[in-house]
Length: 76
Image (cartoon, rainbow, N blue to C red):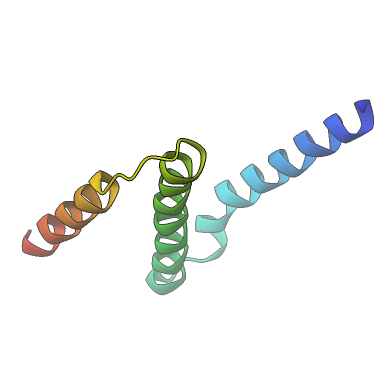
């Protein structure tokens, strides 16, 4: 149990290090845009999983706010 606990923190630290070093390695806008989109959709999927999967509720608020934000940023 203790060894598995340490492995979790090692992977978390490794992921955080990659997350912080990524902008220094990839300076072009396209790879940065791809990673932003990956994290954006991952966050949206996690929010949907928590409210729909674990809580069993149907909520379209996440998609609504996501769409309003996309529409507003396009108009700006």
